Length: 227
Image 1 (cartoon, rainbow, N blue to C red):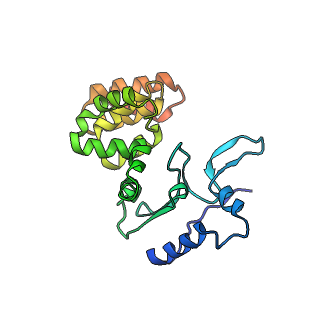
Image 2: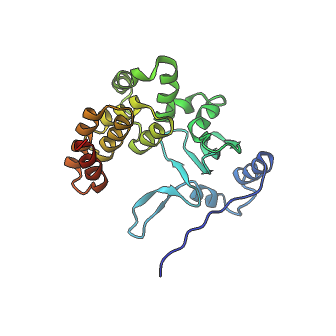
Image 3: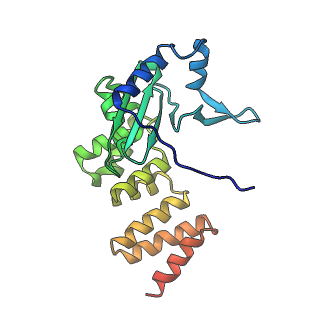
């Protein structure tokens, strides 16, 4: 039997959601405080190993400080809860592609400034807007020397780079994850889109070396090599 997927949503307002979150965080919705703590904690597989997901939440950032749990939908609305900070941020828009996930942590930083630095991607994004995206690799090198815990996530970097089509972020991803085939594949894709065929071929070849099963990369490489 094949599984089925369906989209869901709610009809609400920021004020209604805020009232619900206040009730949730203040313990009004559960008989036991431990239930709420369990909901904010990583769930486990049947073998006892922890997952990177909380119970019922799509966004989870289990970091050393300023843990964040949330949900997003349609690339236009997001809720983020900071259990340890007694804080929640709600952004509801009707603008497709607005990607409020990209700036919600900066808004949270207006209430608790350390939140921005707790999230590597948010901290990187904020600084690159100030110093220029062409400084992405240099900034990262310097920051990692000062702060060894500064470790942007490969998948988050890649998704952000696609949303804003930023060549320098794809380049940064390859620098940070030199053994990740997908980072090279994505970098090759944007290079090709920008007309840098020779460099794109180099990236696709490296991607296939790291992952010989990258069939799409092979097809693209074969096509552009014949041009």
